[in-house]
Image 1 (tube, rainbow, N blue to C red):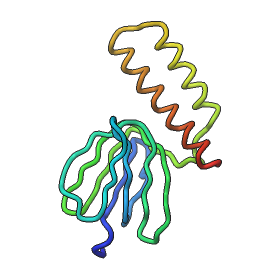
Image 2 (tube, one colour):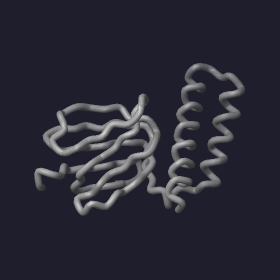
Image 3 (cartoon, rainbow, N blue to C red):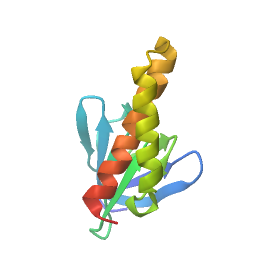
Image 4 (cartoon, rainbow, N blue to C red):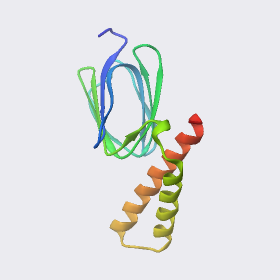
Length: 138
């Protein structure tokens, strides 16, 4: 591992999204984005559903959409654990639009606080998936 890279492991509930050396990682947070570079200070970060971008050791950008989760940074090793992770070409646009419509309808119906939070998260996930699909035209 060079001084210009760090080890990154991205794990979703159903697959490994990425495992290897990375130069840059951009994460979705509640209040914007955060970039992780080699030798970042150790910390744990909560993620919100949204787009991730990573620059691998060969200088290639890899894009994805993740659900909720967290990132742990320790000794130049980054582990991201998320409920879902998809490359833009894996996103089913029709399903994402239907999920957005269902979540918006449920939010309009005024459910309990717990249900409201669940449907807000569903809406955020579907919007992130649709943005990535449109942005990368795959």
